[in-house]
Length: 179
Image 1: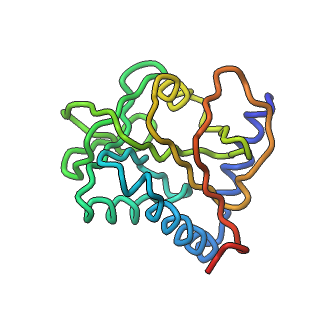
Image 2: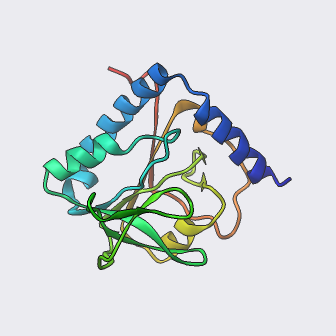
Image 3: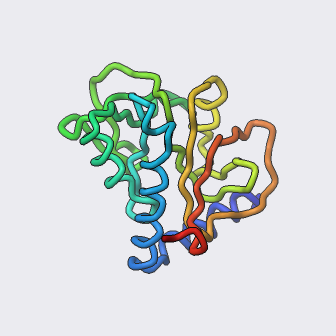
């Protein structure tokens, strides 16, 4: 088994075994950091991922951004290894073959900023996702802002590959910075 596959497996186990209280504490801190980011404030079209139960929950961020009249877009798989972002409309979502809610019958949009999901992140801005390469392929030709949010244990060292794309900003939970 390749090292990234092992890291993927270990991170999924760690995410699934988090205590709800600790997860909520870290999410609250990271939500605040994200929403206070100037690039987020300056962006009109923001891409979010529809989180699975064990992942960082994007619901609070989505609600806050919608209250600020931001346009939220979410990813939809459009082919082998390819995705585009479409406007979020809770009445026009369907469950994909990956078990994730995706938009139906809407026109794609290019976001100003993307909240990029991941399982593990290094200090340089690289990430390990779920192995499909969807975000790496999209980010290859994307020049807008990218941010990731990570729980404390998701900071990992790993071997970066040629096709891996960097995230410009990663907020890691830190008790030292907590106010």
